[in-house]
Length: 276
Image (cartoon, rainbow, N blue to C red):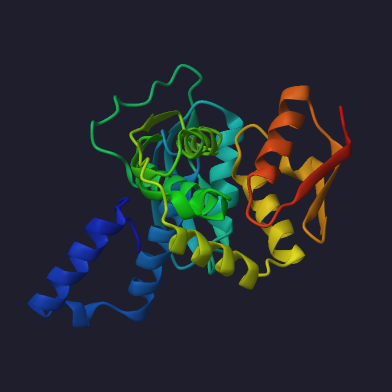
């Protein structure tokens, strides 16, 4: 869309609504719609990138050519913006007019969460919920997870102090989490004989596959901010998890073992092959 200034998706949606209600929508060509979509896609990739989101970058698209203007601190960020724009379907050329200013200071942050921060928080919430659901203590947890600017609040109940503390540790070790407010309340009510029998029968009836365990161990490592998941190989045989590979420290090794042990279906963790 020639000479079009940078627009956020919400503004584009509003503009489309106005066009539709006024009858002006019919005057837009198919190419206009394609270019508006491409501008939005480029903006979204910039907004989600931790390296570009704080910079002032404007985007316009005209017949497959994206023009980028604005300011960044380093050459590498300028090149990254170009490569991201080229990654959008239909963009054949990029006119990268972004200027590099080493002393550039981003505008003061708003108290409102940015689009990227909302997505980050939603991703953290999803990861925390998944880790808690896979935990051996999940049956005793009734948890609500809320994330804002990387700060997670856990609310609900746990059937023991151990389960509450584990939920807090699993959350804190999740990638992107900066703080945890663990408001879980320990429910000390003891299960009845009937409830115990039902729980035991259910556990016997649910055979957890080795492939499921392996997948969840890998996912848990991937979500963790303190583990390099690419350096650890995971395999499972009859509920016994085998960890091999290299870790950076004894702390990372201990955490990997503890996280694997905490998952449903894991009977034991063998980590002699996990070395420093």
